[in-house]
Image 1 (cartoon, rainbow, N blue to C red):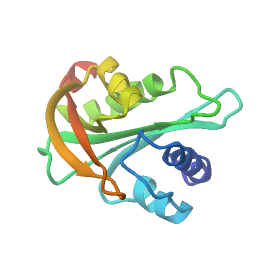
Image 2: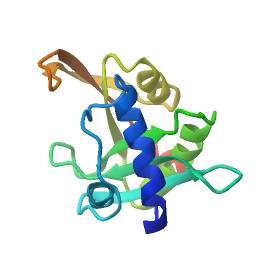
Image 3: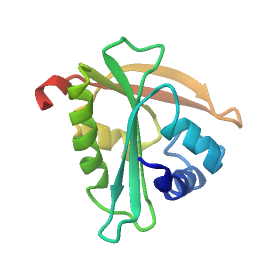
Image 4: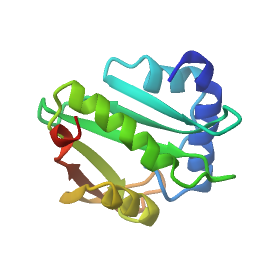
Length: 160
């Protein structure tokens, strides 16, 4: 991701937040907050964008460090354009992210997904992630409890 991708990527994330049900985020991002979180954050390992044939951003995938994970395990977040969707964008992003993770010596990648995010759970399952823990009843802003399922991808080194 580069500075010129921020506005389009931020719109994609805010579109996903507005639709609801597929991200833990419930409040839209400003472009400065988005840039700080996904482009400049100290926890960022990498952030790739996917582009369509016109060069427009169709999604992004962030890989970062998280204090609760082992040192050789990165955290991942994926967001793709919903309107219009581009099939295969998430798979293409993961191919690039896994190359970077392997080159940097990571052995595993963590994804934590809301239990009611069926498409997100399915996506990470298709990428090879497997369930390893559940955080039960994590409240949304309105107090509604929603489980968070953590999945782990442990074949990073085989993708060098």
